[in-house]
Length: 385
Ligand SMILES: Cc1ncc(COP(=O)(O)O)c(C=O)c1O
Image (cartoon, rainbow, N blue to C red; front, side):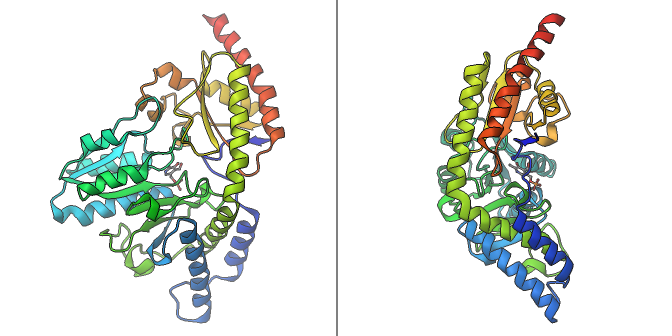
């Protein structure tokens, strides 16, 4: 049995999205900028995808710029808006301390270019408080970037409330919604933001495709310059097959949203409940609500997460120790550290992230293997001590 509980790292591609991609890749090879029929067909495939993705987030198709994924969208939002806002004299950027590296490392790069940056603290809940933003916000703040759902914990940030606060000082608001789109309803108007990043491979679309939603009228400079693609906001011949796949995944994600969310929440809650009751020394990290329905992050006392991950992998179960890019290192996750958890607890943490294909039988399988794996690792540690 192979069981995949790592959907926050990436998801399997939806079968009809894959079929569409293969057809487009094989038959629709036109350049969407070409005037002839093949080019126009490619353009119309992109238009369809643009419409599906914008419907998923309650946006206008013309406000969407296709990118190579979440990382590029975050870079575009921050670097592009920072460049456009430079002439205003504002020199301050705010983000939360639990953002994805795509935001955090980009902020560091901007700081080297003279921008002042503030990272908002989070408490043990893994949720940013409006007070923290009020304290950090100044007349000098150009951009506030707050992720919607955290990738490691699943906690949902009060983006609408924070955006309203940021607006009182005239700051632009960006949200990295890579982990919330198609998991919970996401509506750009309700969130009250100016910029929103999303990534196809987190909602059963292909890797290397994403979008940045840019509210009409928002000042932003392109970070990829060249041709006039995407209304001169992102140069480069578009990856039409991937964009088509993202469109199909967006449409299917939207239609299944309510039913999937309820089913996944029930599975996740059972998994969480059973782990806490069957395995002593276990704790859920971060607030349990509000959370996206598919994610839980659990600490196992006296168990090194990397060892548990490997033990589970040998049983055919895929989980994660936090952000995929920090796996393979023993660095405790920056998210858990930002919450003030002691290093050992951060190093004992496993993220289980569920997706559309997961079943009750798979939860049963995990619940059969996990307690034994934990017990074994604990007995080894005990023997060594
Ligand atoms: C919250 C968040 N932002 C951004 C990204 C980066 O997205 P991509 O993998 O499409 O570059 C990820 C992916 O792990 C993520 O979880």
